[in-house]
Amino acid sequence: MNSFNIFNILKLSGGLAIFLYGMRILSEALEKKSGGRLKKILESLTSSSFKGLILGIGVTAIIQSSSATTVMVIGFVNSGIMSLSQSIGIIMGANIGTTVTPWLLSLAGIQGDSLFFNFLKPSSFSPVFAVLGVIFIIFTKSTAKKDVGTIFLGFAILMFGMEMMSEAVKPLADVPEFTSILTLFSNPVLGVLTGTLLTAVIQSSSASVGILQALSVTGGITFAAAIPIITGQNIGTCVTALISSAGANKNAKRAAVIHLVFNVLGTILFLALFYILNSIINFEFVSRTVNAAQIAIIHTVFNVFATAILFPFSKTLEKTAYLIVRDEKAMPQANILLDERFLSTPSVAIIRAKELTDKMAAISLDMLFMATDLICNYDEERAKEITQLEEKVDMFEDELGSYLVKLSGKNLSAQDSREISKMLHSIGDFERIGDHAINICESAQEIRQKNIVFTDKARKEIEIISSAVKEILDMAVKAFVDDDTAIAECIEPLEEVIDNLKAKLKDNHIDRVKKSEYTIEVGFVFSDIITDLERVADHCSNIAACIIQIAQDSFDMHRYLSSIKRYEENSFKEQIEMYSEKYKV
Image (cartoon, rainbow, N blue to C red; front, side):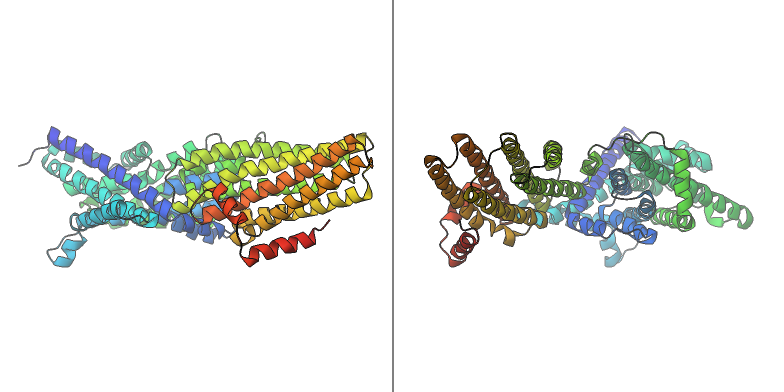
């Protein structure tokens, strides 16, 4: 008879560590690989509760973590991107989506001697996945294949840890003390508390169900013990969401409370129905031992039951959350788009960062347009508005810079990494465009205060270069927002024309000063305005070059700009000629 000793404990601890590590690798790799899909799924979000339910199932099935999905939802609610009512269906769906993992783990309990059944056992196919994973990671250059390799390897590590735990606990079947401890869990209250605490500690219901499945090989866990433990595990997974909601706004806290209330009510209703029916029918299977597949069945039945019963009462759950988390003072919303909770799901965090960068780009565009209008039609209120917008742009740059640096340290797909690089390189240019708009605004103030009057020709020249700069900035913002390389490629020819236009205007300006058509002081203001406008065009060129180079998976802006200026093909020349004619002095 085998005895359970220190070596079994070491093997169990090692198996648990490997199992949890494998689950983390698998979950992160799936999230990284499915980043694009997640974006599309989230974009399809509507106010329909049923679609929200399907969305929750789909996202959780992809990333294999109901905790990650719920934390994501809390971030959305905190940001105002998702309403509290929208979040309810997704939270419920997440509970069903997380049942996929236990079904995969239940393969460890497959019995049979045929070749087919033997191949389905993790001990047979896990080594194949491990080998494939290592081959993809080490011997391929494609990032996409490396990501697939990480998924294979993570799954192999997960299954190896599961097998290791199962082997370690098998001798416990012959230990009477262990069997007597397991019978205590037949008490519903004790079983629920045990499941809750276990999941709260490791913060993953899938992992805690996997541990229960590993212990089931001892033959000491009955249906009577497994059912309350599994329902408790679903309550324990709420801890992650509750922790995440700390410091969030009231609605985000309510989303976390709905998650908890849903699982607590689901547990009470499921256990009440089960024990009432058992007292009437006296189920024979209650005293029987469970295996890994039966644990997966219980887990799925519970989550489907809880969702089916409580989904029609979504509005009631929402009202309950409002009763528990009452409105007090409105929380100040600083920069809620960049919620730190999204950092655990990089593909989603990038969506939020891109939205804020697009907003920053649009504000810079508005500032420049308003500032150029002030040159001939000064308005004090508009000038104050430009100053306020400049403060907002500066804040956006600081917030985005810090957030994107944190994001860049995460495990990212190649596409996500390129997107972060594009934003990091562009936010400085958008901020500097805002600075030049402020400079033009100050020049307009000086014109007003000193009653400066330009000649008709000088005023016309400012209008021409302003129009050209407005067009190039509009193109740069559209190219950035839509990631449109075709528009980006049209920017450099116009930037060349603006450079030539500035040189021409400067020559004209010097001639006018020589002819005493206006004073040196007036000349300085004119020179400052055209210099700021030309520098805006330079920043647009930087943004366009960044978009094109990153799309080509390289980043050497100096080399790109040098090569494009030497470009001799007709299309480039034709564009320069077209813009030169359009903005002719």
